[in-house]
Image 1 (cartoon, rainbow, N blue to C red):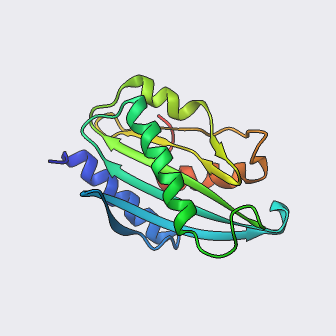
Image 2: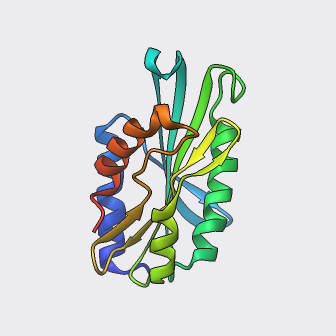
Length: 166
């Protein structure tokens, strides 16, 4: 059973995604409920590209580095498959916030999420780990060399959707 603080965090996340036009919906990944929100934005300053931003969140009993790393890989694959439009890399990119929420979090998982953006060709993931019991959110807020043009946008959206780092 999902604990109350985890359920409350996911409900708040769903509301924040809806308020920003991400059309959140519940999906089923191998029998587990997953919240998926997405939006697409176009900016000339991004070299005239469209960025498809996915936020994919799930509650788990315990977050470890292994669980968030695996969820990040699955989320990138899902986003690339479901973005639609032009192929990735042809004036289009994909960014993902893979979010795992729990009342039990390994501090190493929070550190892993904060340390860097995970990159694939024209795809960026900024994994987020949420310790709902402590109200702590960990995700990368830096400006890496690869994908730097999108960094300010991703930081702004991450703060808006996920909450400030604690």
